[in-house]
Image 1 (cartoon, helix red, strand yellow):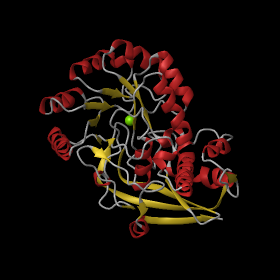
Image 2 (spheres, protein in one colour):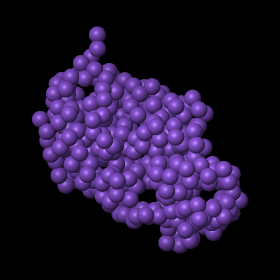
Image 3 (cartoon, protein in one colour):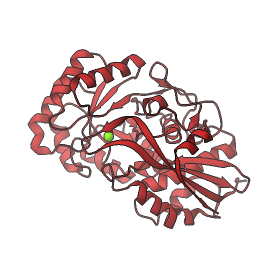
Image 4 (spheres, protein in one colour):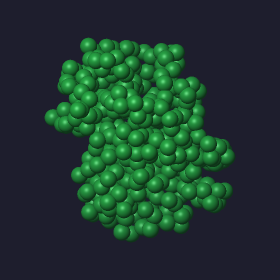
Length: 373
Ligand code: MG
């Protein structure tokens, strides 16, 4: 018989956490992460935890910390309250009448997956069809630095720490010369570049020169919703294109693969609305032999744990951005923190996300708490 459960209360903890170092992309620069930890509690007192990944400004997608709150508070939490559920896939169905707003949906859905796995007394990675015992290969994403010497120092530190690949954020004027220098200093390290849509097809000749660098991939070089231009670019460059900002649904993935807009896809739970859609995208990419990897949104521990669980699915064959807690935070909100050894992260052998909340740390970052009963 199905194990029925209902969400009796939802608690939103709004946190403001200072990053160890500011992070710069082609579109934004920030020092603090302002986001929500979502706690859901069922009729038996079991808890599940999720994390929202939207940034305070809408540079990555249209969502922000404030829009995510608005969607959860006014629409999504009311859809969940007192509903009888037997499986977390039902959450995606409940949320179907709400268009997009994937980061708001994913935070709540993730909390319910964690709760569900804990009710089943199994690790979340196993609950989604992954393998909790799989060591997850991790890379690191490096923001745009003030100077080349700063960048080389940061890269050297991460290579020494053991990360499996280095991803550099780039923008026009801070791209080829810098990548060439990093490639010269680190000839063997898997290297990739993320443009966050900083180029257009007018830059075609410039982008063709990236082929000299032996990059593992170039991520989202063109417009955030431009499948056709990416397909035209991919026909003219050797470097595999990876789509990030363009992918919100399974339909986007089908379009990208059919048009040849990319050869690799990065999946982020927040961008696609949670595990139910992420698993469908994963399975479709597996059937079509398209490698996937797990992107990052500078998550705190809860979001990080969810991403690592996702990355245990079999088609995650490239290292993700799910670095150790210490990459971004002086003190994370989970215990133990996520640690990396020789470029690998191993999930604890525990039910749910596998990590406990460090309440003292969480409360030290908390700026607001709202409870829905
Ligand atoms: Mg990206």
